Image (cartoon, rainbow, N blue to C red; front, side, top):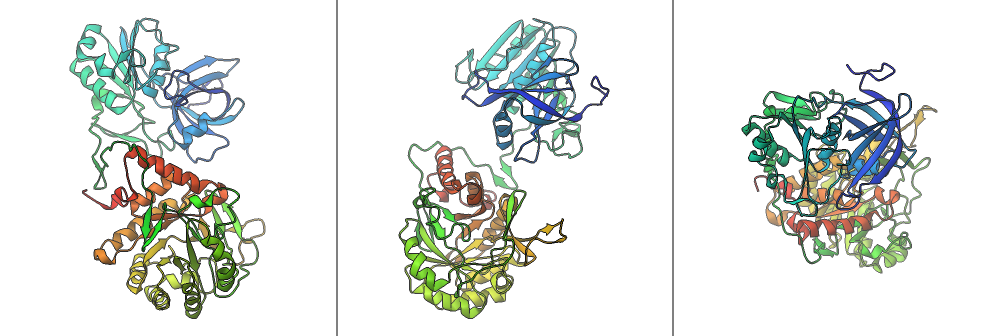
Length: 596
């Protein structure tokens, strides 16, 4: 058991102070790798890592980052250097830290590199140079050779004092042109007379190092990487397969004897669904248009009902004409004032709402708001709600006489006492209201469903049978918030709608299952699905489309970032261009196609 100068056992949980954070100049592309310096009281051993989490953070989990270099400061304080590759939200957040910022540190974690007698070979690939360069620094100068392999540029070698330093780059920008095998071969290993090899880097490189070292009969130690939650061995989220069974990367590792690492080829399928083959990037712009029930949208991004007004409210904030569609505020036959008391309540990764369908009424909408919506480029969608069957029917009759291209039949509002979600809970009720509305309008009819129904897919199929031209899902989930100081519910109606990023994975599952159910119908009876639920980034939109959605509605995200929908459209286009998708159809529902 290791301990610091105050006798505290490792790993410890403590605050660290950022003393510097800047992009590494040698890394390409520029800004892809950062050097973070943190002052703390613990001191790591070579090969160990820390779980790092900014005190001010939007992510839940810490990120495991290997130690690159350590400087002794005054007293018990040490300055620890970390090389960080910017990969996702967590690393992006860490790399945006500035001098004086606080970070939470759990560590040092994991086992260590153990030196051996004789000359050794150290191999680092990409960001994997960090832990092995840190180890090299503890060895006597020129007692080792060091091979570093990068796609482009080079970094992390400032403290390496190798007898022979070899750098390879895939693009030839530094050192030998090519990847590691062009420089490190079996012959080189044999001639080097190495006592051991230490390596860290991408899996294909490590598999190669394992192969040639074992052929040459040389002991090889490999530092592995895995997604982690705890860093101390309790969550079992970072296990890797070995010939001795599953082992925890954070506890038994991250350094393993290469002999127990199988390095099997990456699976060509997950859950029976084949990994998509690589396509050539597009040289022209992709087609983002989509057709729903005969109505063409210029792109699949729709402003969600209840979160985007009638389209004009945000006109001074961004160009709303870039959207694919706009779903109006929920409309009822009569004007409504909505619910009393608190109406919105922020929660972690989301928002609760209890608006209660406040709206000006359908006749006012037709005379005032609809003309403004129709003057905009996005497809105008009238969201129709009601309390009774007659109110739905009368509202539909009025809308049928207008030029609005599409009606979204809302039988899913979670925060009204009468009507709303009650209509979408059972097959019979849903079927009744859809049939009744279908009988009085020829307009394309998309039915908006609640995720609260215990027979959701059966309800959806009943709606399709009754005349729905499409399904939109999910309206808000239901939740309860409590004012713990007063000991009363936050909302007058007790229950309220829950939306935002927290519900997205559940919504993706529901969309997947709904599309799967619809696909059991004869092809001529299948209808498109519009996905709703926690969409805030273009990546979220891609997920829903891959799950089978034809389009997506964005709600809560607009409150957090008014430009969210524009960024989603731009990001979706860039993704399609990079991945070689000419149209949405080319990747829509790809995870529905098992064995494809």
